Length: 462
Image (spheres, rainbow, N blue to C red):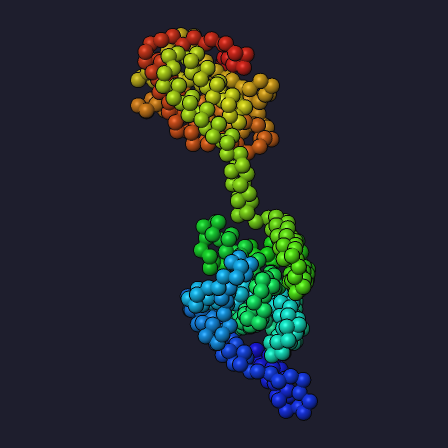
């Protein structure tokens, strides 16, 4: 902070008192940017010493954003999304504050390894300097150069193994300065490029912040909780050393910075090409980081694609549950279950009916009346208990709470995801099957074992 102020002050004094001044600088932008920047710096000092609450930090940052807005640094248009449409003052104020809060905290969020936040900020600051220099914004280029010099001097002692650290006062100050300088550049270049360049050049902290918020929302955790699943933590978990992680992320920051500079010479396809390259790179990178939350999102997306098959399988189970209400004998039950499971992803089932009287003895004494019945799809060589097979055992309890046996459904492991709602088996089908078995024994009908399909296999004891 102090090295930045000293360098900026020396440069301004030199410009004023040198006889051959290279530029006549207007100090109005500096008067707009520095007061809220110092406010953010003081907030960071307080946070380092007293651990400020998120509400206090966001409130002070919102005040700083409002100060920029009052000084003329505003977001009144988003050409990338809304073309030439200009927002009202209230909407512009909200967008300006949101931008300041987002970028300020983004650089604070990636400050998890020695030298990471400062190095990433250096690449972004150099982009701001180049854009200001090419846009003839003398004061902004001077301020950006002074900030870059302060970061370089600091980074000499902040790189691993570090002897000095940014703290919240340093990371918040750098993030705020970059958000403010980019706002000034957008005022002077009101085009798509003015919005896209800072968004791309701040790519790593923006990506880290977006991933952190999205991960916590998906997993149902508070957004402001700390965790060890940031990008740098994931790279460390992959076996990289501290220095290797920082150098890799420097490379990522450099790529973001380089791609943002391509937008200085826009053509009809430049923006689309840059966004396509970034999107592809981010997608591949996130996949390799192995976030559990995004793996679950991918599974849900795949489930959406196969939703039609889920409907077919679920309807087969529901249809069987309705037909069981009218089953008159054991043969009907076997036929209904066979038809249902032929329509879904299970490889087979085993029905083990068991009827007991009030004394606990079998209610049916006819030989074979309570023999298990197995069914499996043609060509399937699997059964419950096989090492490559998983099974689900359902106790059959009727609506009147009578135990009527067990239904076992099984499926081989080496298959695609199950496309059937298991809740339909455990609730509707199991209950209706138990009611059907209970109704048949109570009606005193014989329960002969009739094998009409080669897929049905009788499993007798011994």
